[in-house]
Length: 111
Length: 119
Image (cartoon, rainbow over all chains, first blue to last red; front, side):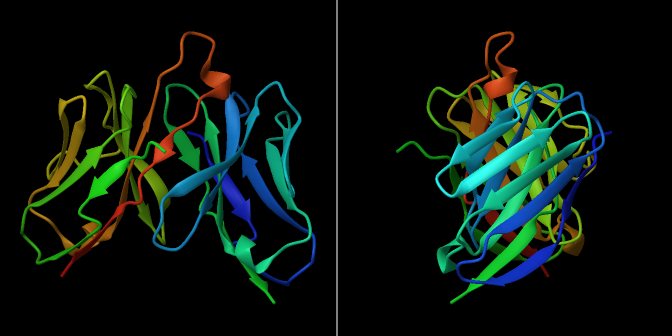
């Protein structure tokens, strides 16, 4: 059974800092890995999707990397802003269509 | 902008009552998922459907939970009887199942969830 772990569980940084969120998974036979953002009381918004054959994806200040052989992914946020405060979830797609989620990293960016 | 719509957004009820949560998937999507989110367990898959047929409901307590798709525009999740441990946020998601070989780029769209409290 796929296990997805996210470290740290919570993170507080001052505005402007660069930061890294970590995700690890136990079964490397994945189709893709996705990073989602969840705001309080809201659903999940997809940020980046990395196919199993890719090493990284970038969107604006966000960069996600994937090392499938070691079962690791990182989400790098450059020049953090208070609006980045949210919970960030990592999910992997194995067989079928259902995603396996980590428990998330709760990020607070202070002004 | 197409969205997955869930109702109700919030539900508070007493133990033993029946609870029905509804989901309207994005028009044209043929896969529908039910997830449950708690602080302890995170997001867990309860059940999912493809073309309205249940594909996997192994994550769902069968004795009290049931999931159905009466038609392509409506998915329901019922709990009867409800218990305090069922308190959680329940999310519905939908997607268009890819052709063979397309899973690498496939994702899901999530609704805003139903926050359920069982007293």
